[in-house]
Image 1 (cartoon, rainbow, N blue to C red):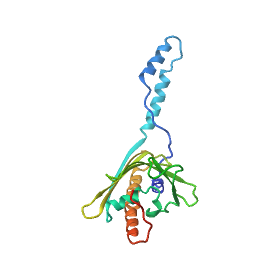
Image 2: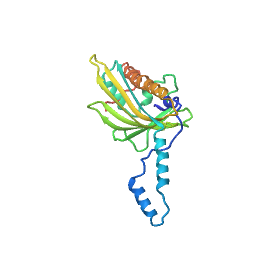
Image 3: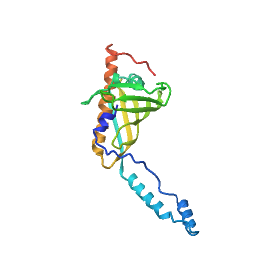
Image 4: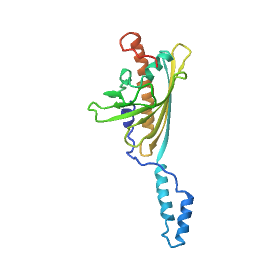
Length: 224
């Protein structure tokens, strides 16, 4: 669902992992062995640790939160949001081609977490990504999920969506996420894409689907 929005942000294709600096105990042991005639390894270990720490520092931390007021009730919105495989029932293209196919990963079920949906985001099915639902609290109307499959370097994406009454019979939908983005990518463009995704594609998209179901022009989703 987010992939086509995020690719447009133009992040760097860096896929290197992070690490911690080498433990002091290892350096001490290797230096002690050197006194017995063993080759000194302490300096190369420190050098490797420095190089890795530079890679870690090449990422910026991203945090985006958007709250959108919708005209449907919290319960109605929640029912559609929680139907994890029903993205095509509500997603709005907002200037982009919508996903071509959405389905649950083999062996996964919407009532058993974690539950992963696979979203094929191109007409020829050559590109897909996964969104994994890891927490669902129907009483608090909050979900947490992760997102994998965006190229060009964005990583560690974790998002939450929660739905509250707005006091006027509608709902306030809040979408929030945190992620790491290579410094070579534009954080401004990434944040703009995510804000649009949260407000237009998710909040307004689900609102429209609920209104369509009220009028009988769309299939009904059971409350989960």
